[in-house]
Amino acid sequence: MTQRQSVTALPSVPGDRPVYPPAACAGKAVRQLRVARPSKPLSSCKRLLGRGMRRAAHSMKHGQAGTSRRLHVPPVLGCSLLAGVLALSLTLGCDKPTWRGYDPSGSASASASAATASSPVDKEHPAPSDPTLPLHRRTYSIVVDGDLVHAGTTAGVVSWDFTDRMKPKRLASLVLQGSVQRVTKLPAPSTLLAVATGPTGLALVDVGSVRNGKLTLVNQHPWSPEARSGCHAAWGLAPGATGVGFLACGGGGVARMDLSDPANTTINARVLVDGYVRDVAILDEEAGLPNPAASTKRVAAAAGLGGLAIVDFGGIKPKSLAQIDVGGEARALAVKDGHAYVAAGAAGLVIVDVRKPKSPAVVGRLLPKTTDMARGVSMFESYALLCLGDSGLVVVDVSNPASPREVGRFDPEPALNRVTVSGQQLFAANDADGVAILDISKPDKPTQVYPPPTEASD
Image (cartoon, rainbow, N blue to C red; front, side):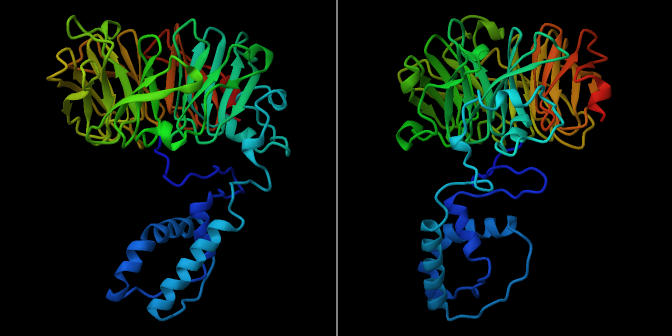
């Protein structure tokens, strides 16, 4: 999935513009003022206002089109004017993001709006009272729990009952600040979802009463600076032993979280690695690592341009064991039979042998034809399911990791971000079209089950 920008905005639907929080709101106030390039005596002013000017420039770039008149003002006066405008804009009319007067943080969790949509691809216009509904359809991550499907969307979490695959029922939704990057279910008997929402942190959501139309946020969200503990952005959690999880922290590396008290989660260790970490996976016996290499305290991390990193939290002082270049931007990974299958952006699928965690080695590659990039990956039997965004899904036979080969492809109309395997079906995060279901009983010919192909083509 595409990396979110550091300046968060309520994402738009056709006909609307994003509305930015206070830091970016300053840019609107200076759109009509273009100050001449500062001279050397103003270097200190540049340092003081550089950050604000960059944010203002970002806002101007994304603002409404229009003309402005260049004003030539004395450098010192220009610095003073810009400082005043920035300060004023941060205090007047920019308290919180709104959308045509609607405050999403004040929306009911679900019960009031759950009945207004009958399916993830409902083509009806959203109710005027709740403009978050179209955002709830833009799906980036999915958790499947029996007939329950929990979708991570631009606006939060939406839960569905897919008992009838042709007529799913929307049960509940919960609006969260930030855009959901990844949803993970904590191991039974827990009824919690770990919802990574980028710069706003990690939300723990109780789904125990979802069939009664209720989702409950149990921890503080967004995170406070104290709870963040250097974790710049939450991209995804890998649940470990009871009460423990490992979090992909973007530029903050990999963190170990204490989840034993869900209402008061804490980060108790963090390891920096080269690159930007978007995904983590535990290197235990379930991942196919042999003993003694297998450990519930050791993880592999997709570290962007830093490649694949191996981090060990088992000792007194957690540390990075190894890091290997994958020839692209490692964005997501799945580990099976001692091999890490890495969605490596423009480099496609890269297969890394991690059975010796201190010396991982690239053993195979596949660069499929695409107009996008490798964004996500899941495993099904001896196949890697590679998500290519706008180019759909590629099924790769990895029975021989050293010689992967493409055997099937499915290309829906919207982007395909991630897939979750349930039996012989894939639940796909189908971007603006919400949830889609594919039958992969014949991996070389994945077919669409839901929505029916005729409906999907409308």
